[in-house]
Amino acid sequence: MTAVVEETVPEAAGEGGGRAPGRPGPDPAAALRTSLPVANFLSFFAIAAVEFAVPFVAVSTLGASSLVVGALGICRFAPQVLLARTAALLVERYDQRSVMLGSELLRVLAFLLSALALAAGPAWGTAVFCLANVALACGSVLTSVSTQVLVPAVFPDRELPRIYARLSMAESGADGLAPFVTGVGLGLLGVPWTFATAAALALCACALLVRIPRIRVPAGPEASGKGEETTETTEATESTESTEKRSPGRTTLRHGLRLNLATPALRILTFWALAYNFGQCVIEALLLIVLLDQTPLTAVGFGVIRSCVVLFAVAGSGLAERLPARLRTGLGTSVFGCGAVASYSLVGFGAYLGGTAGLVLVLAGFVLDEFCSGVVAVRVQTFRARAIAQEDRAIATASYRAANLTAVPVGFALGGLAGLFLSPVHTLVTVGALMLLPAVLVLSRSVRETG
Image (cartoon, rainbow, N blue to C red; front, side, top):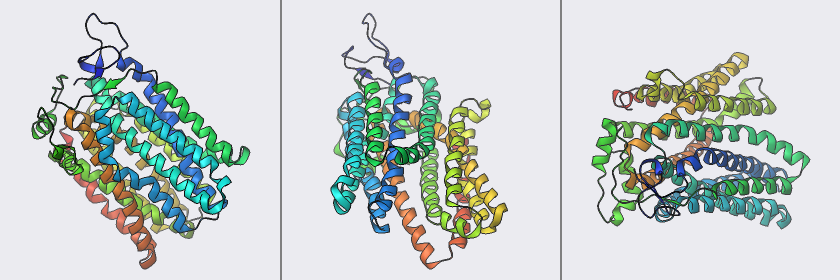
């Protein structure tokens, strides 16, 4: 796999983006090994802070209705689906430092808009919040596609699990810490200064990213050169052969979706991800209502639980490559992928049981979900980096992300409608039981035998 370092080498820099013989220059892998996870933490911390604060401020200060809160959510996710193909094209056309800096600057814009929203008054303030969420969404899709293209192009194959583990730990740690810190910030600093602080964190991420070389990942036909490909990798590469000049059809989301379904293992993991996101969101739309009615849970207690269980996602990401050797293969992907989705059957049954015992089961389900998700995120990202050819990775990632982000609002919408016409408790139990189907499917032999 070849990454071009534009500032030092006009041609291929070799495996892992190393230096050309006799030509001194920065090693992209060394530059990214530390800076990328730290920038990831700062960026996701700022994003989580705004995602927590915007709906809270919109409701508590601007008097937003549930319709407005829904519109804010649409502005946060819809652009990531609609602009997925554009993001893939930008990642292939420009160097990755420029793409990632551009995505961080979009976040800075989102945070500054949020800081100014209250000054615009209730009606205009809500519109400003919507614009901020659109900017945040555009930055998110660019970062996601760029990271999934950049990491396997720069780092050697043996390092991929470790790098993905660091990135996953940074994201989970930021997601867990940000809501608590943001709540304190809103109370002590006020709304404008809290959003301004988030903008400052995004600028710090920019300062880290600007120090890395300009790394361009060509979309042309190139061999991976890693020598550690699995059978699934070979099958996927053969099924996505490239030509000297890519046809327009190879840059469409439809083509990207075909890439995600190219082999049995890719098909199962794609279906698993869609089922996980969809089922989780159906349950999330109803869970808090049921818990407050069926268990002794308070709103404060629920917030503490959700913040604490994120620590298990951090632990899962950190332990992903420290598990027994057999679980650092496709077997681990199957086992922990099964645990992540099956955990929601435990959540559903706990909500149905009610009382303190039911609340304990719900907490156990959350813990199982977060830990297994932390492990399987590292395993799935590593497998996809090895199984999808370099020239197709941008559009494949964009298509995969678009499909999963589409499942999120659809799940919330169906969960909300089910709560109006059906029993919320029985809906939770039913959806939790149905999530055992993808849990069993991911245990299939084709996934277990992947590298």
